Length: 80
Image (cartoon, rainbow, N blue to C red; front, side, top):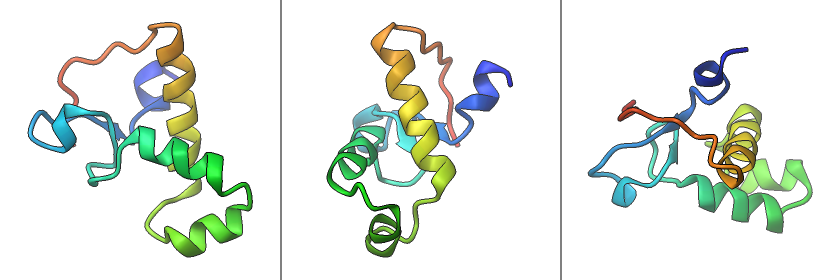
């Protein structure tokens, strides 16, 4: 899986959420998804409370966070 395909649900738009990385162009940041994951260990409960999120959104948010810790994120104005 290529690096871009691995993070194809992460979007960055200068006019949305202050240019922070978001999930699928929605107004929910990767940071917020990570906070949701940290406070909702039960996936069923998480998806009941946030029905617009999908499992792959969560996985990509985690991959994005892991890569950003090592400064491996390479984006060139990725807009949904």
